[in-house]
Structures are given as structure tokens and as C-alpha cells.
Figure 1 (cartoon, rainbow, N blue to C red):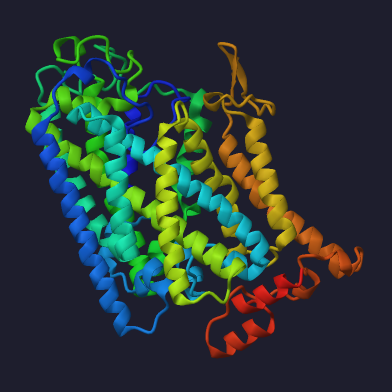
Figure 2 (figure 1 turned 60 degrees about the vertical axis):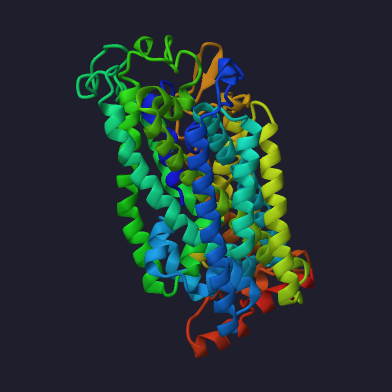
Length: 552
């Protein structure tokens, strides 16, 4: 589901301050001479066919989910959000990567979302707060995805930017509404197959175009442009390590990833899906590397695009559609549209179903209306999908906002949500006081570290922070430092609070998170019948947590 990140084309960026964002787009295409060009009719026909294909598969999946529900006693929520926990291994491989370490503890708890363990441990107040963080992450990712798709379609098809975005959003919302996770999972298969095939079809044409030099000769040499592999710089080693950990671990703070492991038909199937997907993912990344290298080896003055290069024009984020339009035949560029649309729609539907899961299960069912009926839950899910889809699409109209969306989405997941999940699953000492202090510490550290790309001033200067062109640049791994500080804060303050209350150093009436009741911590979710009795006895089940927190 994260294959859309393959279009980042990192080889083409020239500074570490240029953010990697979904698909290949940060900027909206300018209303320049493209507006005077005629609409690409064959491309429009191809896109209509693709959208109808995806919509048809989504409708078929919705009928399949209804048949499965009639044969099952599962709840409406589990059927819509987790596909009745019957997503096969093969479907799972096509729809997710990562999460191997989290599969066992979360499936043993029969979780619907990744916030269920937090609800069991800390109660509905804290879990609902973290759900709001996750909901924000999903909402701000949708405009990033849609702007990527809309900009590409505008460049190649010469259709109005707003029209491209709203049509794409409508298709995604409709098939997600119809079948829930079933529709999302089965359409992901088609989208990723088309992505893989269309990318590899485009690569030979891009590589063999007459306007580009051999990429093996431009690998380390200054020819038309700087070497496309970049120049090693020890000064930026910590930044590269920070980005690597951020991209590798940050996705573990997204509900849409864990939703796929929780929906798998078995624990073994979930683990196999994670393992196989991890090996398949790099194969999907090879075409992006080759296209990025070719773009950096092209004499743009000889092309219909002209000089200066996309990077010099400030259109570096649009290199994929530009390469398809100016370096390949028109029929190949039409095929390339399919790969971009497939990647974008695959991520957009995942964000929609993730937001519906988090709000419906984590906030509405667990905190607002525990007694809600299946029919009520069904309509809540639909309402959330529509609301999040519309709000996310409306956000695409905001100018100069995509970098801020990236910051809010990716870094909140890495610095706020990921540490909470790690601690609640693997450290029994964790309690509500530590959870609150952990996210405060992590968030404050990251904000004080600054980020010039969104106008956030650097207040806390880590080692290596230097003034460049009037702007302070951090050369320390500030994102990872903030994340690790959050983990440390959770564990330290959890231990401290437990010590103070259990030894009577603070009065019990101040213990709003009932730490003293957890004096002998038990595993978060024991397994088996006998363990279930112990689980209920210690007040760690979902129902017990709700009762405990309702007394606050």
C-alpha cells in the first residue's frame, strides 16, 4: 500500500531540505502554455477505462463482502473494516508491507485497530486522544496523494487540475463506500499489478530516448548535470540515517498498515504477507531509480520541453510526468498515467478505510457509544469515509500547504504514535502518566528542533547545527532523537508514577490513571481460556478498561 512512495525520485533532488513526498508531486502545475494545448483524447479514454475497471472491481468486492456477511456471525464493523479477518495471504502480499514484529501481539488481542491495545491499557481518554492524531494523519495524507495524481494527469492529459482531483477522489470514495476493506484490498491487487507492468513498459523507452546520455557514464561524472547518484558527504551522514529510520519505521505508526495484518485469515498468513512484501517492495523501486537517473542525464534543450531543466524551473517534483511526456512516445506516456493513478488510488483508499476504522472503533464505539448497534456502526463508517474524502479533497485547494501536510502526517506518526505503540505492546510498566509525558516530550523536541521548509524556526540547536544562507540547518538526526526521547519519556515517567503512588508518596486520590491498581503488572493480553480469566480479573479487557475509565 505504500508503493506510491516509489515515485519520490530521490535521485533527482539536490538538497536535503527538499522533502520526499508521496508519488512525485509537491507543486501544482502552473497555468502556463499547457492551458492552450488540446486535450489528450487517447489519454482521457485510457483513464476512463482504468477508472471504470477499478470501480467495477470495487463493486464486485462489495457484493462479495455482503455474501460473506450473510454466512458469518461477525459484526458489521469487523466485516467492513477487517474483511471478516479472512483476507488471504496472496491478497495480503499485494496490499501491505512491514509490521512483522507487531503481528503476533496485536492479533492475539483480536484488535480492530492499532489503538485497541492502548485503550485496553490506558482507557478511552488517552486512546481517543491518540486516535485524533491518527485521524489527522490520514486526513492530511489524502491531499498529498490527490495533488500527486491531479498534477500528473494535468501535465499529460492537459485536463483542468481541479477536475482531475475531484473525479479521482469520487471514484476512490465510491468503491471504498461500497465494499470497505474488501473493495480496498481487491482493487489494490489490480492497481499494483498495473503499476508494476506499466512502469517496466515505460522504462526501456525512457532509457533509450535520443536526448539522454548513458546513465552509467553520468553515475559519477559531471556531464550535463551533476552526478545523479549524488556526492557522498560525511556531514550529512546522520541526516541520511535519520531519513532511513524515519521512512522504515514511520509507517508502523499508520493504522492502514496494521489493518492489513489484523484482517489476515491467520497469524501465519499475516507474517508471510509481511515477509514476502518486504522482498517485493525493492523490485517496484527499480524503475523509479532508472527514470530518475535518466532525467538527470538528459539534455533538455533538445527535447520538446526545452531549456532550462525541470530542476532549474522549480518543477523537479514533476519529473515523472515530464519524462513520460517528453522522452517517450505518446502511447507510452498514456500507459505511464496508469501507473501513477494506480499508486495514488491505492494509497487514497487505504487512508479512507484507515480513518473510518480509527474513528468508528477507537472513538465512536470505544468512547462515545459503546452500545451502538451494527446498523448504526455501518452508517458511521460510511459517513466518515465521505467526510474524510471530501475534507481531504478540499485541502488540495490550499496553496503552499503540501510540505506542511507531509510534516503533520509523517512526523506525527513517527514521533507521537509509533513510540506509544511500541511501549504499550512490549513494556508492561507503561501507564497513562508516561504516555502523556512521552508524546509531550517527543512533540516539543521536534517543534523546538525547527524545520525551515515549513517556516519553523530552530530554537534547540543540536550538535552540528550550522547557519547556512541565514537559516539554521540541523545535521543531527532530530526526528529519531525526538522519537527515542518519547520512548524514554514514556518508560521513565511510567516507572516514576508507579513508584510514587504504590509507595504512598502521593495520595491515591490524585491517581487519575489508577496506577496503584496495576501494582502487579500482567502481560497485556494473555492467551487461552485460563489466561482470559486472569485477563478479566486484572481489569485489562476492553470492557474492564471502559468501566475503569468511566469512573474518572
